[in-house]
Image (tube, rainbow over all chains, first blue to last red; front, side, top):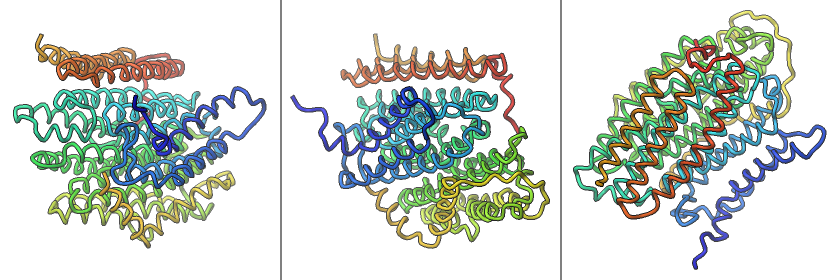
Length: 490
Length: 99
């Protein structure tokens, strides 16, 4: 009898094993340890160990490698996103450190345990080579995230955001699942590359069903990524959740969903006759996502809501390049995801510090709370300036500028000039609401807030994000080369 | 019975569930509609599995049922925590988050 998995399979999923073990450890330690203990540090330690184990077994991730009899991809593409997810988890842990209690999160052991679980799900989601595994990864990630959104138990807003995310998230998973069952019906297998080869020899009369299946899958991914018209949950959920979780959703979960969407959609649909249908659909989605995201962000008072719409708009920018997979579009998306993660984490981190300086206000993340910040707390002002410029794609936030250049350049090279023009116009619109934050910080007088000192973990996280937002723009070639290599491997 | 009957039934069930989620305002009913969508998918998986003569689809159904159970426990907990705060299960009463 052949064995179902080898030790090499276990090495390839070592970070998943470490994180799952860590999640259970946190829960058990909460039961058995009397007295105070540092949950954040424990969770951070497990994340670091997972990262080390990923790095230690990097030789196991090579082109065309799979694990567990072909259920998981373990190629460089998986490695890249596993690393990004782990770094994002660690930054979330740094952001969660200080003001978690002020965000209203009481059950900290459960909070960090769910955070690790969520990252496990995200990694499975990215690595899945079979549709049911893809679904399981998606659900492990989503179910943990529903709980995390509602983890500020006594805040009505937090519960409300959990409810909205739960209803729309499980609705979208069900829709995506129906698309999977149609693909299974058309091809007779659930393994993604086998489906692709079965579809290429499919009789023409089944084309209609295939288009429905593509549509349903796209709806499922669109909900998770936050593409218009499936974005309407995002602002409410982002605003109501505890801020570190909002940052985690906007960065890590979005990165995982984009990564899985790129891989699954590219393998299944982006070739042959389907490409023209596909590019039309993506053209339309990217255009309305950018435009509606940016126009809605213009009129927000809440900075968290503004960042939510901005993250919708950024998803639109990324999909501009998805239209041109042949001309470097996919590597541009990967590059942009890394820079976007750095600047979005930073922006949410500062928003959290500012919001927690006004604990008595109900609208703690209102933009008026940023008034005069550039003078009362100059360091925060400088950092926020870097992040806002980077999100807007203006110097000195060179990473955002260069990332956008790669995205639009890929589209132009593939002769989709109109969508690139819409993208550039949208970047111009977005400057208004990003610079609005700077106007508040430097040109309006504000009340002097009781100055909370910013602790080391938070300061470290913000420093790393700010450095990445600048240096990835000054020295982009290394990361871009890695991204370009990684996308050729699946 | 031909495959079509099962698929048409599954599609009808799925559509009822989908329109239920979109049109109804009661969170418990919306949640039941989502469960109905998942069960419609299960039906189509089993039908396709029989049609193709392999077991992949039927095994997939087990995983979907497990996920549905996990979703049910988390979902009901969230509904209860909202109910504690606003004493209502209507979505129209969950209106604190808006522009």
